[in-house]
Image (cartoon, rainbow, N blue to C red; front, side, top):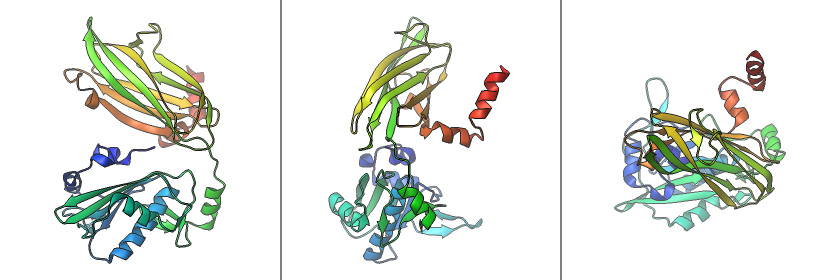
Length: 322
C-alpha cells in the first residue's frame, strides 16, 4: 500500500489539517499521475460527485493517488501550464466519511476497495481529501467506461488497454519498509536499531518462499553477524493481511554522517522490489523519526533500472569488466 498523503504532506491522511492544505497551495501545484485537484465551487454538487467518481475509477485502474476536492481554481500561467495556488474553494455540503465513500463508489463496478477519505472543516465550509490505492481487482468502470489516468488527466481507456488490464499478470502485492527504532552512541560508534516490515495486501494469491535482504555500507556491521553487511530473512508462507517484521542492530563508525540503506525483497510469485533509505547521523541522532528518509519506495527493480536508462545486460557487462 502506498501512503500518498505521506508523500505529498509528510503525514497520514487521518492526521491532515486545513492548515496543511493551505500551506501546500501557497506554492504553485500541478496535477500529475497521482494527484488531482477539484474546485469546490463553480459547479453543481451532483456534477462534482460524478467527476469524483471518474477520477476514483481512473486511479483504481492505474497506480492510485490523491484527489483534493476543494482545491484552488485552476489557472493557466505564461508557459501554458495549468496550476493551482492560493485560496481553497470549500464546499457547503457536510458529508460524513462513510457516507461520502458510499456515494463516490456507487455504480463503480467492480465494487472498489482501498479508498480512504478525510473530511476537513473550516467553520461552516468543507474540503475532502481522497486517497485511492491501485486496485487488485481492476479494471473498474463507471458510466459504461473504463477510466484511466493519463498525462495527469482522466480519460476513457482504449480497447487494447482494457484488454490488457483484464489479462494482467496477477501476483501478490507486497509492501516493505524500514523504520529506525533507536539510535545512540556506544564506544565511539553509532548503534542503530532498525525494524524491517512487510505487508501482503493481496487477497490472492498468497506468497511463498518470501526472501528479503537489507544492505549497508561496507564499513558498517551487524551486531549479530560481525562479518556481514547484509541482513537476510525469509518466510515460507506469507498470506493475505499478514504483517511481519524483524528487528536488527547495526554499528556505524562515528565518522559517517550519512549512510544509505537498500532493501530488496521477492518471493515465488512476486517480482524483485527495491527500496532505498538514507540515515542522517550527527547531533540529531535521537530524533529517529526525522533522521531516516525514504529515497525510493517499493518499486520494481526492473522499473528502477529503466529510470536509470539501464538494463540487466548493463549490470552483467559491469561485472564482466571487473
